[in-house]
Length: 425
Image (tube, rainbow, N blue to C red; front, side, top):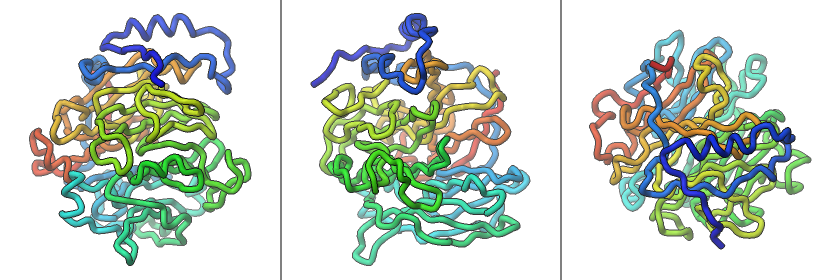
């Protein structure tokens, strides 16, 4: 069943009117279901459906790297990041990229023939996340794609320990193994929640598995820091926290109860899913909810399915995401950001940083949206807040889809980059 969807166009009048209607209602943010509006559809003719934001000042922190995917900062301020297709964890020490990798994992090597039908692989070394007690135990997590002896692709979540001088690391143990994988939809984004639990997004290479309760594909997983299953998960004895997730590479918390989740819509290459392209989503989800993939997408809804807050008929598609809590750029405090990548055959899609300004009292209420860096640095993969209170953004121009893109060859010119946004002009 398709409910009436509110069409969003590149204006702010609708958002301001909605804010005036809902702000000041005195609602408890732990239960805001009564404040949810109808799914807001950005039609294809509106493109991104957002205004161009003001010019921003950007510094290049690192360049000449290859598909930096995950970012984290050590207690001393040094930055570590994963290089997806190299399977390496690299470190920027005192502002200088070090030649030697801190850690390396045996990632699946994807052949040209495997990539061909899907225009590139999405697997490799993906997320990196520090243990919340890293300062004491030097432990961290990484998630990567591996190949089994039978040639099948799987994903793994491992726990590592870094040396005292942060120059090397060793794998302690695999926390979750044999996570179903494939050429794309690997997931890999991780965060520590306000409850000190580890949350992991897992994609659904085989789309129907997203609705299979006892399969981790197409799910948001929640676990204790040692990889065990918490007693208070939505289903006893199961890692599953959210269901029906096609593939999320970015999520964050609005508060202790509401997760802000960017989710990819369908494309031509979903195994068992819809064949139309587009319908990327911004979702607000709570424990145990079902986002609907692959049975429901866009602004469609059904019994037991939580509908999105915003849907873009025209694809971005979204990458990493974060809720900005810093004050280095106070105009952005409390905004949710997502990096967007674009598609090689449609160069005007995506390739920007997208800001979603939410009501401070209601995560379901979008007050304004803006785009930044449109086509300035090519395809953007990850956005994260550094310990200095600034946003950091990574490019992904050196993957197969970036090299195929109809835009200036950013990869050939200066490799992939890690950028820091230092202010508004």
